Length: 148
Image (cartoon, rainbow, N blue to C red):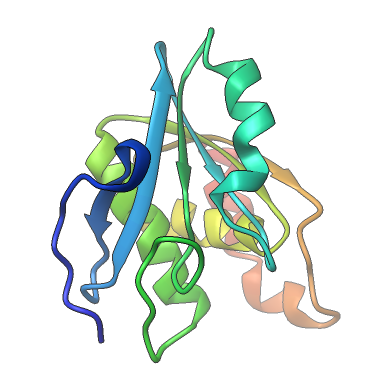
């Protein structure tokens, strides 16, 4: 496990400590209601830069590097729960209700986060992977999504 030291660093990066101590890198620009962008597999925060530039006039746009990617710390555990706790830690650091736009596996992380954290505002999920047969185990997401 990586020891988490919250600090400011690379190009205004701020680190948030996840529940298991993994440091999660975040950046913010703009002003307005908070919007967190969560990238998918094989990416880092930089895939959101064009979107962040377009939305910064309307929102405080937060981007993050998921664990093991970009400037975030690595850890031996890569589970959906761990990654959802990472997203929840960023939301808690932002404070208040936070809307989330997520892509691919980042979308699964965001959905799981909605079960863990009541500060998830609205969710926009793009191209979420849903393994065949897994939907029955996640039927509890339906009431959670109705709360949003």
